[in-house]
Amino acid sequence: MADHLVMLDNVSLAFGLDVLLDGIKLQVSVGERLCLIGRNGTGKSSLLKIIEGTQLPDRGSVWRKPTLRVARLSQELPLQESSTVYEFVAEGLAETGKLLSAYHALTHKLSTSCTSDDLIQLERLQQAIDGKDGWQFEQRMTTILMRLELDPDIKVASLSGGWQRRAALARALVTSPELLLLDEPTNHLDIEAIQWLEDQLMNEGIGLIFITHDRALLQRLATRIIELDRGQLTSWPGDYANFLRRKEELLQAEENQAALFDKKLALEEKWIRQGIKARRTRNEGRVRALEALRKERAARREVQGKTTFLLNEAKKSGKLVIDLDHVSHYFGDKCILRDFSLRVIRGDRIALIGPNGVGKSTFLNILLKNLEPSKGVVTHGTQLEIAYFDQLRAALDLEKTVLDNVAEGNDFIEIDGKKRHVISYLGDFLFTPERARTPVKALSGGESNRLLLARLFSRPSNLLVLDEPTNDLDIETLELLESLLMEYQGTILLVSHDRVFLDNVATSTLVLSGNGQITEYIGGYRESHQVIESSKPVLPETRKAEKPKAVSLLDKKPHSKELAAIQKIIEKQEARQAEIHDIMSSPDFYQKPSDEIARVIKELDGLTADIAEAYARWELLDH
Image 1 (cartoon, rainbow, N blue to C red):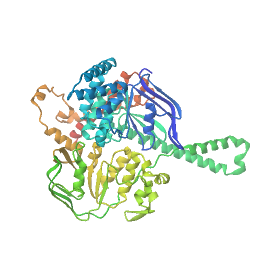
Image 2: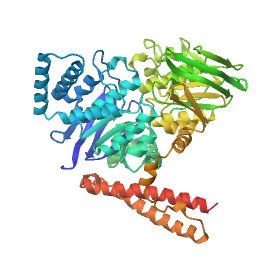
Image 3: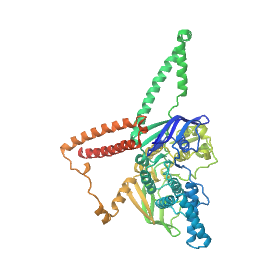
Image 4: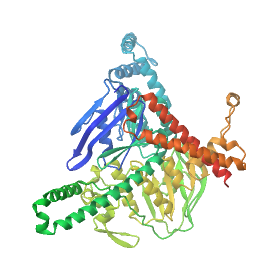
């Protein structure tokens, strides 16, 4: 157990008749970075609480390494009315944090006034902090607050959702945990902060279990994927692409096995209906076997249905959707837009990206003519039907039921010219009839977002405005939303910090960099990021310090023999990759010493990169 941080054995948890965990097992080793995925409402957050120790399972045992330091970042934003950021972050350090908070406040006071009592108190605090070896935490707090660009003396309650999320993250990181539990850590963070978080977690070298819908974060961080599905926990070694392939194979095998089982059950049911012959003494064993088959079929937990929503598209708008002519906007002395012109044409899918607080939502409201700009003219085209997804969920009435928020008291709604019962329509968004009658205030974050989508897509539209639509969505629903938006014939304005989502949906990107500056790029996040990075000046010192680049396959000139050589290299690398996948899929792999596990994972990462580069060169030669 020396390399293990946590072990769960036969753990079960249920809320009423809803079984979330059904006898699961899990081992978490030193340095592992596990991504926990699964549908909204399957129990992922509850599992993190059990691992942390703040929730007890109904059955089973949970072992934690003695003196294990665990920190958890929950989905909920902090509710702090009076604490400063420094005080809030320091609370994660218990008694040492209280001393540091008092010391910080006192030194702040001494910068403007000083009394003898203050100096005496300062000396006492210094001695107490020395006694708890607390200065290392003070330095760590300062470093983390600086990297997250948090003002230590501002009130937490005055921060926006994104900045409160940063403060909560700082509080989790400052404790130097051996095991860090993150529940949707990228919600409310801008792209720059997400990339900093990735780098920080990669370099921390700590155990990590995280829930995320951010596929770029998942792909870079996870050393293993664990999936919670129908109460069972399954471990999938390798990256997200490998998980998708192996999961599809498993579901197909499960479907085939279920079909064989059902066929056998049908034959036995036909036999039992023969009556007296079937109930003869010598056939009692067969009757008991049939009863066992019936019980097994009744206990089978079916795969949860997939979301199957469709967009309710209105008639086409005019070719010109929105025209901005030399628009500027100010909040006091702060410039949000500076002399900006833009034409949005029907069919455009435009993404808005930039740091939190730079004015993306304000810009959206100017585009929609919900806000009058300080200067310039905003013109809308003809026949616009606008549907607006608000990240603050202001469109939802928390006291009303799911049904009433969508149908507003009606039993039927019209989708693409056809009437549908609202219960049936909400079923496409995975709301059961019972859940559809639940007040919105009782929904989870993911359910609230699905309800917003259900409400949004029930309205005819030819201009979709989506402000952070991906928060709290599970990956499967997110990917379905992507495919739906790519087929949408209308126009889309999109604000998101999900890099993969932006790459898959956007046809152009507006980057808001502050001080009213907006730059337009063709394509999604990747294309805009590449242009921005390539345009940055290279300092002379950096050029001198650069080492000679290793010769890459992509740097070689193509000739006929190289193609055959690369094919052999790829075959050899893929064979070794398959061997490693087999090794990692063994149940006892993660019981091995941590340095051996790290060596295997490192070899797999290197092979994956080498294979990708070899394929890129092969494609170049083959054209």
